[in-house]
Image (tube, helix red, strand yellow):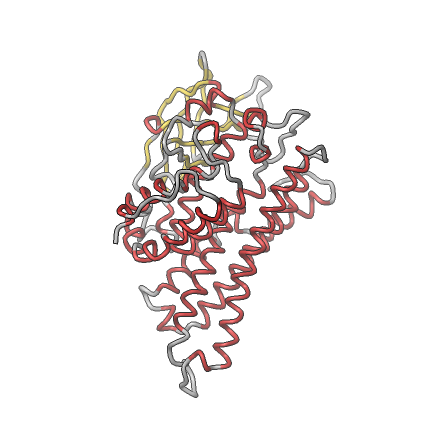
Length: 409
């Protein structure tokens, strides 16, 4: 089977058509899980399928050839890809979602140049292992190394963060954007290097004394930027509240969608395993066992609830943006972090679904090398090491913000 021989969907697909197209890729994504793990990324075949279906264009502005269909559509598609392979979903999301940040916060000239790429894909990384920035005529010289740049394999651009020294001695973080010819992807990701998410293409990236024009660098204050009366550069340029560009909720949503897709994949696998015999007497089919019926019910309800909560939170996020455009109050950092708290709870529900599925599926069905359930569990375990998966830290930050204290995470 090759997706390259399948006809692409319409040139201007609806949200539902995009979701259905992403869903149609699920069988092939599951067939390729082993190959993608070894590659450390997804294959050229799947990349071309994403292009054919315009999945990279969902958050790209219409002004620059995109679909501009919004965040709920985007995350519905992301969940479907992650349900096929959580590692691929992680990679695709973190390569395609930065069109949202870029279109929201960078000036028109930067967008005209970068969005000339077809498709536009950009990995990003906030924390360099080591980086230096030198001010020069017309911009900056940037050198450094950044690790865990998920989604970088097919990146046309890279959006790293580095600190610029200020006249008062302080250091201010800036985000830069560079084209593919100005950075090097290091071969340090894939099967055997981590316990899970092998296909996430989270490679290290190096930059060696690249010139970055001044308009391709902006202060990295997306979480708490004040819009004023005019909104962000992206809103002024595109006239769409999508590009007001708050990021606290959306960054965590990007990680959470992977776990929601993973939970739904566990649900699918658990349903398939219900035809097997019970692991303990009486040896009836699991579908007739009260214990397995209970566990299956838990997995289904938890997985589906996680998806419903994530998408409801994203809808509220979009409604808060629209309310400001309609003359209501500004969508503040406080509200952004409050919505993020709901997304954290969606991630916790997904994690519980995965845990129940793995621990009750049986050793032969889940714990032996090569099982799909085991693969999903290890993908989830890899996620749990990420700073964005430290839920108690995020919820403590929410509590502080609700009490009128500064955002720290």
